[in-house]
Image 1: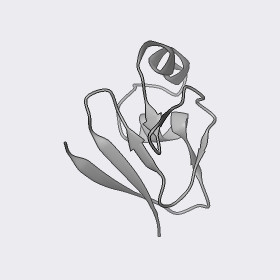
Image 2 (image 1 turned 60 degrees about the horizontal axis):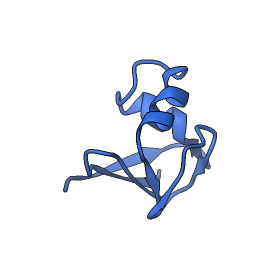
Image 3 (image 1 turned 135 degrees about the vertical axis):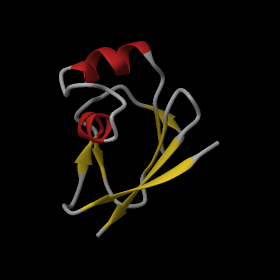
Image 4 (image 1 turned 60 degrees about the vertical axis):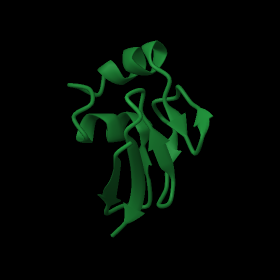
Amino acid sequence: METKKVIIDRPFITLGQLLKEEAIIPTGGAAKWYLKENTVLVNGEPDNRRGRKLYPADEVTLPDSQKLVIEGK
């Protein structure tokens, strides 16, 4: 299981923005479809809201078991 640190330079990032910036989805519009078709865990709980705000120390687990940890700048 790979853990990747994602450094943000703003107070929060949405789940949809994170997926796009990490090249998991090709466009922001694909987030709704991706989250409907795949189980994404935010801090260990399933979440399918593309507008979910992620703050430093939040952890996102993708279907391939990759973990993304949000960190502030």
